[in-house]
Length: 77
Image 1 (cartoon, one colour):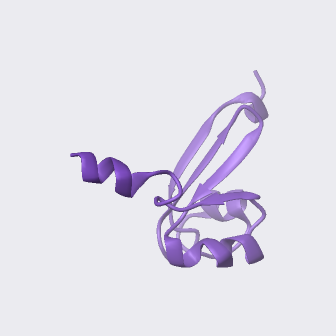
Image 2 (cartoon, helix red, strand yellow):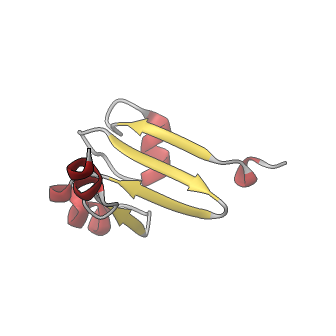
């Protein structure tokens, strides 16, 4: 199995973590979530930073916790 076939989960900022910087392609001071699985990549960042991530990053699928339904899930608890 090659490294490209393996799933990868990173949770960090890209200022202090070279692996995260390599994965997303730009400096991000706040922690974000990067997931690579099944040939696709997803970046999860705060609602305020989604547009910046689209503009500067190399990951095309950028979502926020709201986009993943976090608020709806939290309301059910």
